[in-house]
Image (tube, rainbow, N blue to C red):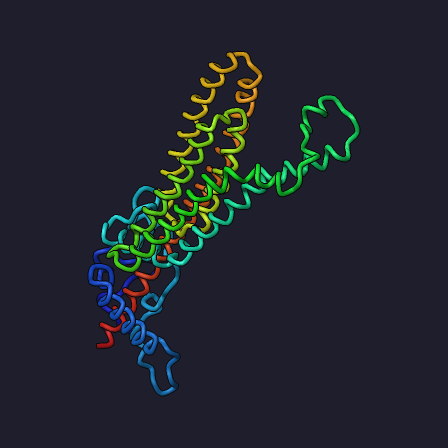
Length: 341
């Protein structure tokens, strides 16, 4: 058996310029070419008939389709596998990832709107209902009059209106408007945009802007004492939604968003600390509570973001290896067709 002149050695993938048959042409032409090559190659790779040994001049190495190894990924990428060396290949990869997760992006906006309502109920309404119940069943204790403050005489409707009025007037319109704008932008990019990767950039910008809004608005409201825990809870919820439901798989975008938000969290702590010092004094109980709560919350956030970024990093490397594997298989199909013709 004679080996084909242009055959690929086992375990090796061709260079990006050799794989350009479906990467450097128009999307429609590339899809059509890939469909034809897949059909022809599937026919050529079908089990041979006893009287048909048309595959006898192909070696096992030429028909090998094992996933690419790390060494092959290193040859075609830079910065620990985060970018393909060829810009056109990188653009094609990002576009394919954005297209693959197109519907996930829509669900992300819906989930955030729903979670905003549930979060408000869990933070504001449920603690007040529990407080009313505790005051009604507990015997006299120190500071009971100050702690209960007539809450036992209030109905559930009154408590609900008091605790959620600000949410429905300020927070929910912002979240709902954010979700509507995000959905419209997402649809426009995927329907009319040439490069679908811009959808991931828009999603990253919108999620980061929403988290910055919550960080700033809680400071403006003057809730500096309760600020660290409330903001940390919102950041964790939104970051989970960003990673799992936004449709953005790019590690670089998630890293940029994380750095911006953690920096904003630190800057806002300084603003809150100075504000409490002016209002209550340097050694006040309010400022002491802030000093105790902030290190605890920032450590939780750092661990959380590190875990999220580590998972995102390894996931993107795996996706790039799978993408390179598909290119390699496509190139092998083309080589088989070339030798048969």
